[in-house]
Image 1 (cartoon, rainbow, N blue to C red):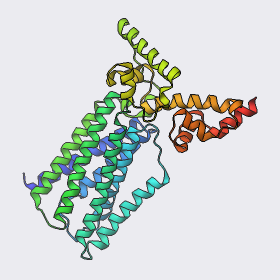
Image 2: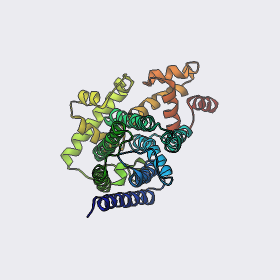
Image 3: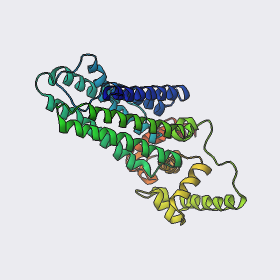
Image 4: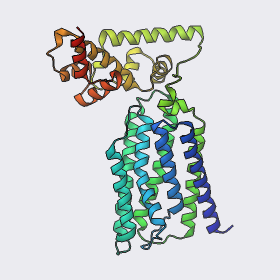
Length: 353
């Protein structure tokens, strides 16, 4: 088999796997934001598989230009996908779509005007620096939120997905910057498409091995991940730990501490972090440690807002006293739980008296 045929086979395999993955996500989880973004990322990756080459010439075929623009904009989708997959509270905003459109439009303009105008290296460098920037954002966010994720299997898969995609995308971006507009030959492109096909296959396999209720937050709503049956001794030991944890919450209000982490709470209970994650996830039904803490904070805030004796206390003071660090996150978390803003909640309670 010639290099050209091998490269074509790798591209076709990648596209086929990505299309199947996108269709599966949309079919199984049509109403889950993370799944829809995952499908969009798979489709954008299919555009990348069709159009990408390591070497870049100044003359891009006209039919390649839209595919390259979608492929470049896909790095924004990748960033949003990691946000939605690992943050159960994440919601799309208009500026997210605008960001994607701007990145795709810049790539489109680069292909049609900048590169043909003799600015190949400038165009390639600029586009790939944007790619590296969004990859860095995704990695930083994943590292920052990893410890708060309570779903053990999702923790493992999410790191694999982000690392594999970021490593491939990052190396390609750096390679593009280094080679500029040079032609690196068929061997490099064949190797690149083979690596892409392998990564796509590995990600698809990893996602198929994880229960959708573990990977996608909304998929777990109908059937919370509560442990079924355990040995009597283990169940009793777990209940003692849960009781001790709840005493810390109720008596010491440990959730008020600044930068409280699952490691700190595990240290207070004298148990390993993995066991505390399992307890909060499987016994209490929480998927994220910050949501667990915020629920306790919001319960305290609700009591304060409904207290006539605290009617003149500013909302921000109640938020800070409950353990929130600023008003914005408090307002969002409060409304997500109660359906109303803190001010509206206070007014409703006053009117009910």
